[in-house]
Image 1 (cartoon, rainbow, N blue to C red):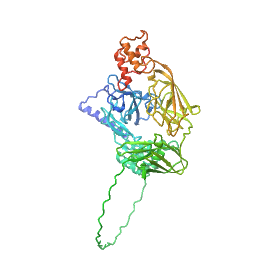
Image 2 (cartoon, helix red, strand yellow):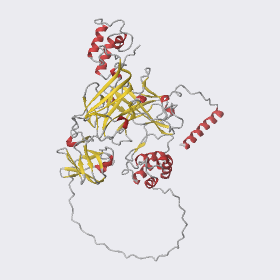
Image 3 (cartoon, rainbow, N blue to C red):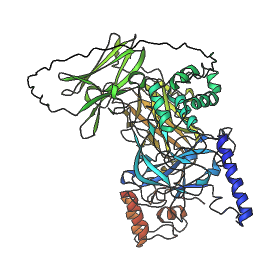
Image 4 (cartoon, one colour):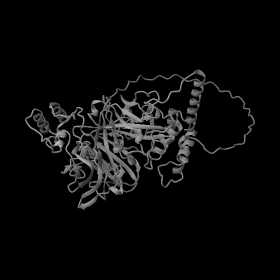
Length: 626
């Protein structure tokens, strides 16, 4: 990083020298150059992104800035605003905070960052771009989707929507990365992070955590692909992670320098050897007598016939402690987990599996056309869960005709019921929501109280009203057993609703319910009738206490927008109904386009909001109270 800074300083010096001799004029920074915002164009998104409701910006430091605080995914600090003139969404980097809670001061000079823009649509479904490199020159620029897809560096089984900058795409764009499997994802390399430092980061992240994949051969291939000298990587690793290396108890996933040296094939200890002198030797020439080989006559052979091959492949995907990956079901990405056919069934044996609880897996069917089907317990969507009570080989057997999965081993115990020690609420915590813990699955602060047998409850007080509080329930401080909805979406408020096992995030949207200022949120989980093997029977309840105001478009004031509201506004517009002259809140609720009058346009806007798929301004948001 220091080297890059010197190069930049040299370039600036040369430019200044040229200006002195060639008459170049140094202008003051333009408005665009002083803009602290970055923008996202959501006007031409793919159909699967739906109709954008909210846009978020996840921005993090890559190199050259150790003070930036990373924000919670889709938390309040990541919410973008929309420029009414251009329609672009923007995030103001001037609002960034430092790790000590003070203002950060925006992007730093000579530093690398990365950014992901994500959205929640009108059906509460989420979508996101790939990681895009970012530097101070990008301020004032706009990110757009390119139409391509790139490999997710954290989970190689997923693909991200490729995106880049409109004006700075020569130097910044989809971030190059090294995946958990040791694959190098092509893209833009950070400006101030050397290739050696990039490889060192990958070794820190994966050399211990995914040791089965990060072999010396894989690391050598990585160094070749990114053009990093192994000794430079070793030195970068030693410097960057000196604190972690000095405290292996606190940082057990930091590989020691001896391991790093072995993986890189370097010897960091200089050695001095005395030169040796060898006497030349003289060998007598040898004569080899020629041999004669008699020709042989072979009977003609018949070429074997090729039987048609079933292209379908079955892969065992599951927890990393078992499979070496985190739920990777692609045969190309996890070739060693491809099952072998034996008669009518397929098998895969994992050797010397360590003692552990709640191992989980599924079998993934990879068809010849590229499609995948994830198969769980007895053909359901539920994971197969088992314990290993003593180190042993574990064999997984799958029968496609019955969808039956068997897991066997000398000390394998199939889990048929879920033993719950405690339940936590996990999600995008910020401020009082989830007590400030973001996605901390074993957070002691978010352990629910068992108010009766198998019924758990927790209350979060004085939480700011917000449209995207995400959460799930997790058992025993692990993601092995958790509950959510079949599809990510709003959690119904005020009544019990069914949960799905190991499903999607739930969202609490207090804004669309008319709550303003702060609220108290009480969440209850009822496992009284939960069937572990079927994954059904769990219920939840969300209760919100706080001050509410009418919503724009909610003509009848019931805090939901339906055809009744559209009809009511139509009647008011043609004078079949009226609003009391002093009822300003009711007027604001019916004035859907906020133009100061009630007309058929307002009714039409509410109709579009009900149908979905249209831009409808602030319909569904609380009115402004005088």
